[in-house]
Length: 112
Image 1 (cartoon, rainbow, N blue to C red):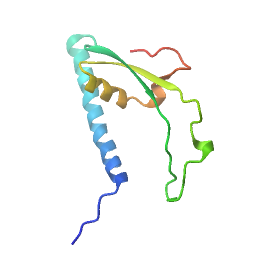
Image 2 (tube, helix red, strand yellow):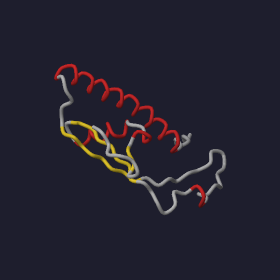
Image 3 (cartoon, rainbow, N blue to C red):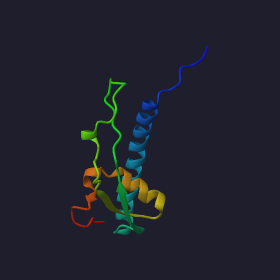
Image 4 (cartoon, rainbow, N blue to C red):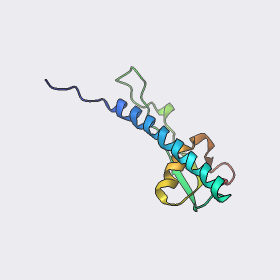
């Protein structure tokens, strides 16, 4: 009997749930480092991102991105700063921060 393939949405949900565990491990490591060393160790990474959306409407398989939903010509640059021992961990720490907490090019400089 042929098994039904796992839908992409389920893979993305599982990846999100798994990342929640990774983010908690990172937070625990940062707290332990602060406790053990008395300060944040590692290199300071400034991470900048630009994001344009691709949206779908749940339950509407025919939906195409409408122009009024698109980001338009202007897409703000988002920046955050994190301290980490390597690029991998810096990217993971940055990914754990909600985008609403990142600083856009319209705001002031990001704080470490």
